[in-house]
Image 1 (tube, rainbow, N blue to C red):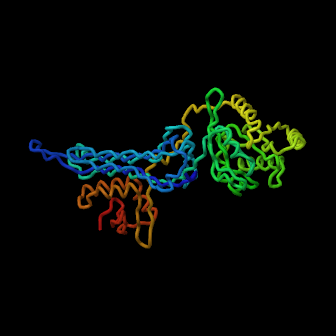
Image 2: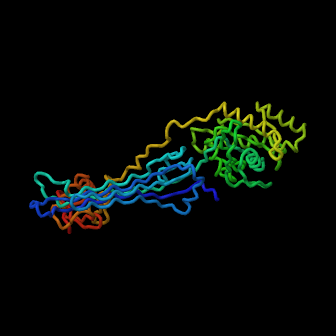
Image 3: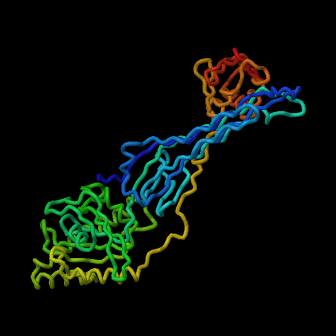
Length: 438
């Protein structure tokens, strides 16, 4: 299965159903009266973490998601049916960002964690809601709230407690295949590992933990060189790093040089990523020298002395022959006990005002030559439910537009009495108190 860890999607909540204008016509109700029902609420759009998903591959084939619209109201004060909510499922570890602001909306780190991405529009009220002592037969109703449309970026950061890092051909894939049930592709050429591999390591007590083999990092990975820039992010969530080094110095890189390359890339990535919660260099690291089976005692002593100067005590192993792998695992188990996993005490989600902002009060007034234009979601909705042939309905529309500040904004733009004003394609003639349809 192809590993996909970045995806972009477009979402739209359900539009609220319009209210309607209706009247009572029963035989024994001589006075009748308004009986327009309310529109149904539009469906919300949620995103939910699912531990049964491993990549964002599904979003390569489907990237547009829409909540169901609410139904319009019915006669006899019957409300329209509410739209069904839509739940978008993603792997645990997915970060959701708004494409326009680049702000994080949610960090989904727990199974079944759910976050609201876009609220469905509220249903509009029918004309039965607008009766007063002086207005017994209102000829107008209310439109449903518009949908919320957003473009989002999904980024998957794998959830693993231990991350194995090192330059290409250090033996990461061999090690994870030895200590877990993972079966990665292994070969002797750069970038054998093209995707992160996950495996479960069993403890003596029967418990287990997830370990990730991250594709080889090279000098410049933090700046986008090689494959490292794409995958180094997957170790941000780990609590322990196993830094494996080729003791034989394959490709002409000495063990100490290999160590410095990785440490520098972790440092540079911390600077460039802006991640402040889990800097990579502050994570506990276990240093492992691999390929003990082809190292002489003198070479081992030389390597040990070189790292002792850095106040480091590496574990020497041979992943290929499994020599000293048990020693490494025992040290890893003890380290994990010393650095226990911090349980999530609450769902990590960011409050996102855009998830509930329908932009109802937002409008745009502009002038082209001698004509003025008014645009806005609420305005378009009002026009759609207004009977432009009915004086009372148009009068109500003008009151709403004036209260929204549209008349004032038109005057700021230089409108004069008698000028043409287009609202949702309908031409009106402006006057300071009201506008009439041309």
